[in-house]
Length: 252
Ligand code: PGA
Image (cartoon, rainbow, N blue to C red; front, side, top):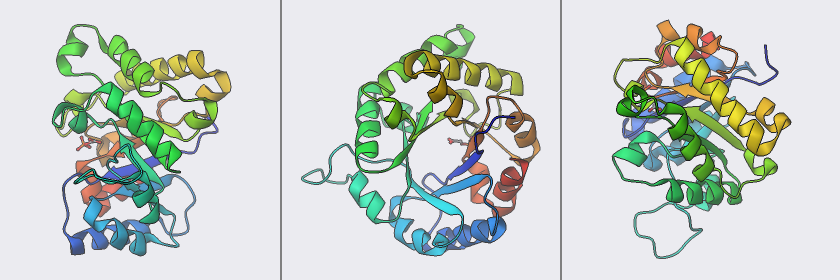
């Protein structure tokens, strides 16, 4: 048992309405009331951040955003700055999610700038990494993770890394109903921790929270979360249903 506090975050993606978002946030907050462990966060779409911030204020539920831009303000139509997110009540921002990498075309270099900007803006960062199915089949998983880690964490020191959570999300497991086996997840997480140990030192690696993401559901959460290097989960689909999300929180 590590000393790391488990962390479950819900990534709502491009789902919910103004009213259903607040309802969902309230249900999560009610479900975790009075419980300090695990850490819990919800990441609603941008337009509902302020309303969800109101709904979770004074509860153990933290607020996160799904993305941010790399500048503080200015002529960047459509973009949202880290300063705006902290102002809206966010503690976290997600960077490098596979949908941003593979649907929106974000490259490692931009993701690195987003991580640095998020940290500079006072946010904690949930940094997502993970291989495609063809990369796993070609035995390139660790090479891909290594590339994403090295590029994404470039320019960070140990103090910066202390504000980063890494989410290992094999792309083939996201939204597909197919989950990595506990052994596959553990192997990838152990690799990430070892890499971080080499780059940032053993204490940083020991303290690093590594979430697993990819079709985490109530019925597979416990098996994944009992792996020694799996410290939490980044939950997509199941985070939209309070009973399912709370069952995953309970498994942690
Ligand atoms: P999923 O999404 O739980 O729906 O697979 C996870 C994620 O993309 O963070």
